[in-house]
Image (cartoon, rainbow, N blue to C red):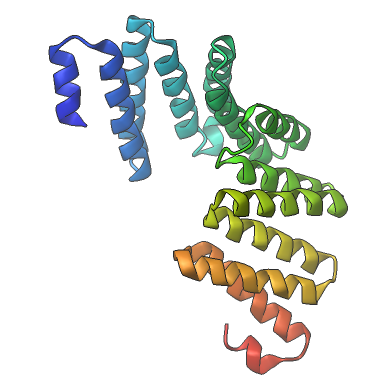
Length: 239
């Protein structure tokens, strides 16, 4: 990416520079280096603003908001930048970035305990995203979690089942595992332990296949608890 950045600088392609700076920021973000990621994202924002490239501006604003989401004491800044990105994305009818903005805003609201605002943003994301967008099952699961938190388990169940169906349809196994886990946990809360065990087993199989450590750990813990409830301690100890 750095070589490409240099090439775009030489030929004075500001949109290309903005894109490469954003890519470098994303690499640093995925490595956990948030301070360097932020430097690249702000550089990308500055360059894209000078170039008048609205799409790159939106991307930079959303990514800056994403970094600010990492700490509770910067949630307000996250909301500020995500809303700026959302406004511009709406103006150019960029539904993919609109969806990302709504999802990220929903996540911040969820962590803040602002359930009504979170539901609003997740529903908005659901409305604007393409029906086959890979992130849709994630949105549906978050809606389910919010209804579960509101003690509306029947509605929560509906959304988690829809998330599992959609993730299976698009072939996203991580979201399949997460949807199965959400269903298992909900059935456990409802006292339907056999049904919960079925979904914990499904989640463990998928998680093991794709080496999804956190999901596999949760699935194993759920299976152990499920067998213990039925006094099947030999099976419980396997997990």
